Image (cartoon, rainbow, N blue to C red; front, side, top):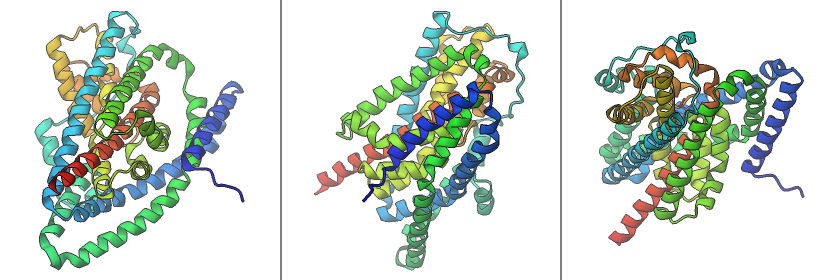
Length: 408
Ligand code: ASP
């Protein structure tokens, strides 16, 4: 009887095959084939992932809340989760800034002509108006626009209200549990198609990323990737070991499928179903993972924070601006906020970079200097973003487990 390959193994094979096909197409000058015939299959797959993301986040969070069955537990999990997210994101910013400054001081950053940059940035209304916009005025609009911060607020309110309504809400509880079971089945089917998405996207990226622009920005890309790797190795290994009592190798092995999927899809939201499977395999409790992962895929973006810090220092150096220590602190604060506001879809982190630049008085049009290679930055930052969410789910499970054990 033939044994079916595990999903991580299938994904790894798809990744290697995608790179090989991409290289062949690149060197034979047939990269258009990947755009015309391979990428559309990747798009179909990512569309399917995005199509289930609103029901997954909504039902998963409500189901998580009602399974905890106690508002105090929801509060305790919520506080630990948000604290973990904030601390790790702030560390990510510091790591990003340290690497960017080392590269800058060593003269490794290329100095590009900012006048050649063209970029139309989105206007930001400021912190308070962003805060107001998190609260929806129309639930259906939040769903149709896939405004995930609003969907999270709706889930928290509905989940909390179902708990508060007690026995009268039994029908609602059963409905959520049953609908979530259906969505989980659908999710399982869509995830089984992941190798197709990984293969086709990887072939397309390898074949089409312009090598000239890539070479000119290679050192900036290396700087960001060093930040990503150091953050993963330091922060996630340490928290796996110290908080979850898990060896770093076991942690990264467990998270592998989600990491590869995030890397190729460049979307935390689309990776959510795979991340849930990985977290469950690693022993994260279902109600906690159901709460932490959707929240993390929307607000916890360590990779995005590193990217925003590196890009800010690089673009400032192109503009001949030397950031002072005080300005670096502002970068940490704004990049943390900008990463929270970044949606879990490809390219969102670059759009939010405008907020950091604007605060520092660096012309936002300079983003045009790095826009062409954003996908390369994005793949790494999304991989880190998702790994951070999984590590949080595993750690919070352990913390809550200890608390329960201490009560007994
Ligand atoms: N693509 C990233 C994510 O989905 C967000 C970003 O662009 O930084 O996590």
